[in-house]
Image (cartoon, rainbow, N blue to C red; front, side):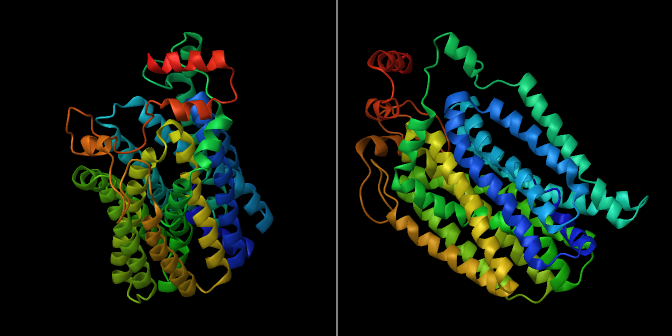
Length: 443
């Protein structure tokens, strides 16, 4: 997905594009991801993560390989829209990890998968912009180099998608179609799952907060290389190398965010998770204010690293809260919240498209700080809020590990559905189908 981003300065010069046209292509890329993230959550609930993951990766590799055929702002925007489909695979990653790991380790697994997945953005910036692009330029012109270099990430994406389809499993017990045939898994209504998840107000509050962390990361992936090149008069290769630092923070920062959220939960329950979420968002916004006003290259790099760390930590913290919202429909809720990140990127991208760069940064910083306040309104059944409400006895036993109860999962899991919610999700089924469904769940 990030393959063409670090090459935007070259594409802009070759095609004579304006700043607004470049940002239009960035926004189109994110629009493609938004649509599929809404769809992928229910699809994972119904079909598992393996099939949609493999198909989408293979499909997204095709427009990536066709980057060299771009000859106008319109063709660039259309190409980026279809390449953006690859970004929707985040939903499958988070769902899939939760199916493959036990509750005791799923928090750590999800944080690492999410963080290292996003790390691909930073790796791509430095490999494409600072290694492959200069390498290709040794035997051809700069224009020929950027028109051919995207074949490399396209080949990697295609090979990965095919490998996933051929050798991986949906869950430890096998693939979903086999499990359904064997009677070890019930049929799931994707539409019912989505309706239930979308009807919960907490889903949309987290949607906004994720827009202000992952949406910011996507915006920086789009903007960082061009910003450093124009502001500090750097070469394309140097700007791409510096911009890659933002993504490299995923190596540890998202995992740290989830880890601290788990520790806060162990001491304070959901209230601890919400406080950590709020702190990450507010400090992230403050760092953007400072970054926008920094004139020194060295200091700008340092502030960007701190800023990026809080962005990734907020992302990890967000998915420490998601599984508690309504456990039986976690897949759909994860998909909606994930789409929030891309929606945020569209909104912030419009700001960078229409405003001066500094004004766009200040607007983004203000939105981030304001999103932290939304934690006040997140109230999950059975759990305390940020400053009001109390945990249920079950919740207290879980996070204090009392009474032999098992600690609540750290991030995205697929818990056993309760009867009331299961009836709501499966209400389109007949009574006999529902009884069969509940027998499978209980077993």
